[in-house]
Image (cartoon, rainbow, N blue to C red):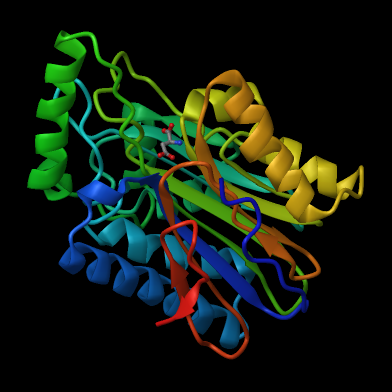
Amino acid sequence: MAEHEIESGGASPTLLVHGGAGVIRRDMDAATERAVRDELANALRRGHAELAAGGSALDAVAAAVTVLEDAPYFNAGRGAVFTHDGTNELDAAIMDGATLRAGAIAGVRHVRNPVLLARAVMEHSDHVMLAGAGAEAFARTQDIALVDPAYFRTDKRWQQLQEALQRVASGEPVNHFGTVGAVALDAQGRLAAATSTGGMTDKRWGRIGDAPVIGAGTYANAACAMSGTGWGEFYIRTAAAHAVCMRVAVLHQPLTAAARDVINREIPALGGSGGAIVLGADGMFAMPFNTDGMYRGHIRVDGEPHVAIWPDEDARAQ
Ligand code: ASP
């Protein structure tokens, strides 16, 4: 397990991103690894540009997640995993820690950037979560790009579904996951979190994971912001993101210990797995995970993106 390989202070604008904890070493060729690292660095630069221009933490997380949704290497937006029925159903959430306002969408099939629709729900509706066709009807009333479902398809994900269907048929477990997310601290000391996902390969019956569930995969308050990635059912059952941030805000537990206790102890003890990025109002952060790897990175005020994948790796400058 990687418990808290990164922790550093300094309450200046900071952005963390993740591209999912479902990374498996044997699945990764050198060209893919290079492309993934480049996209993580791009997301960090885009979010950092928002912060450097005086934008809010919300602007930064939305910008960073949009880059990762557009990249085909991550399980969100283009490149999302397939459902049992061969469709892509996308979930996303965003939360503003300063006001506790939040927006989320679940099970959409035509929204190019689900994080932007989640933000529109937060800012332009009276609701927190919209799902399915209703969410897409709302998207049509907003300036939100809709695309043909073929846009989300990549051959790699289609192949993963075929393999998953074969494994299920022979009684083997399947838990292909991914997800992208970002947490940010802006110059005014405000925190925000955002998460976007295609969920889990071979999901069915309208399954919704933790990413759009406020307090499970996504949460921010005045003290802490978290975006999770992993086996969503366990993040929902432990209210993982809320649990981490309340440990920090109310129990004044050190952020790295709070993140480790929930992500690397409580969730594995129940049989789950995954990771998270967690950022405090003092600029401290942690990126715990208990999988083979987690795509992740951070950027501080100097604008230098640092990216890592494997547990034994310090996030290095790109
Ligand atoms: N947590 C996501 C879900 O369960 C998947 C992931 O993060 O990989 O839908």
